[in-house]
Structure formats: C-alpha cells, structure tokens
Length: 277
Image 1 (cartoon, helix red, strand yellow):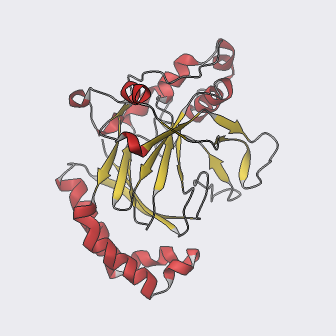
Image 2 (cartoon, one colour):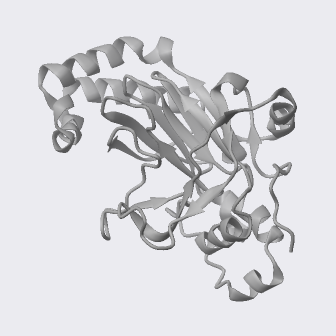
C-alpha cells in the first residue's frame, strides 16, 4: 500500500476559525526505535523538528466550511478568552510569583487550593456552562517543563513521555469514539504553547491501513494510530499556536495529538476540562 504523504480531507474532524498565522506543519514523525531519547518510551512517535508555515492552498484545503453541521465533539477550534479571563489571570500570576510557586514545578499544583485559582476556574466553569451549554466532567491543572517537543507523560508507569497519542479516558471502541467527551485546554502561562495533531479521526486512519496491519490489530484504538504512523510516517502533522488567554477545543479521543512547549522559557501551565458532548 502506497504511503500517504499529503493531507487528506477529513469528513470526521473539522478545523474552524483558526488563522493561518497560527498554523505550521511538519512532514511526519520519527519513531523512537532504540531509546535514542531516554525521556520517551521505545517505539513512541515524535514529530519531526522542522516546522514550516502553511501556504494558502494547503490552508484552504484543511479548513472546514461545514460549521453549521458540526458540534463540539468533532471540531478543532481556538477560543480567545482574554476579555473574560485577563483580570483573573493577572491576579493568578501575581499570586504564583508572590508565593514563589513559579520557581518550583512540584509546588505549582498545590496552588489549586488558592482563592485566586478557584475564582479563575469558577469563571471558566460559568463560560462552559452558560456559553457552550456543556457540563464539566473533569478538570485538572497540568504543569509542564519548558521547551519540550511533546508534553504528555505516563506518570502511572515510568514517567516517560508517550509521544503522539490518542486519549483513552472512556476506553471506547474505535467505531464508537464519536461518543467520547471533548477536551478544552486553556493556556494559563505567559508564553505560547502548541497543540500538535493529525487532521484525521482514528476511524479514518483505520480505513487507510493496509490489510496486513488490520490483521495484526486487536482493535485497541491506540494501536490503529500507531500502525497508521508506522505506515505513513511522512503524513503531515499540524501545529496550532495557543497564546496566553486562549484555549483549544478538540476531540482528543478521536485524534492523534499532543501538546508542545517548544520555545518556552517559563513554566507551562494549562487548565484542562473534559466536557460532555
């Protein structure tokens, strides 16, 4: 089966209202076969390091024009929450600095009990309920090291980074992934962070696998993404810039993705919400 090296049009995943200046692309993944980076699991998938601007033709191709027929469960979008959150985030950052949490990664998460943090999250909760009309299933603060190619760590195992991956909160079969909850991730830091993703759903990836790969599958959804990346290691990966006061919405149980803090100098703080569809 011939390797796919150019973007395909997705029918499942829709990108909306994301300015071209926020997008960049790299031509595929590197596979960590031999633990060349001991911070990652062996056989993890890491995006190639050369990121390029997206030209107008590619931009028009990957963006969706079907917004009216979509819902939060199948879109990737960027929320600008500056007007809503700026006064609360300023006080939040001042308190972090005042209490010297910002200098100690292990201490930042203790800040979730502070008054400033609770006021901030209360405003975000109200936005999700009142404006998006969704219920919050879970929320958590993530603290990441600076200048990381990818950010997700398997704390339950060896504390190594997992690389590009599929979330599996609900453990749905790949055919039922559209029923999974959606993620909102809000940048609470002082610098840009990034969302890395494939523009195809795991179901679309399955349809593109070779017959040999399909025979090897045990139909675990994460296996589908791994086989797709092995067979199509030069398929392009998108990178979306998320500025401070911005958040992304994405169906992270349907798409291969990860966060990135490349270029950062300060601790990366982001607030994650898992919401009902």
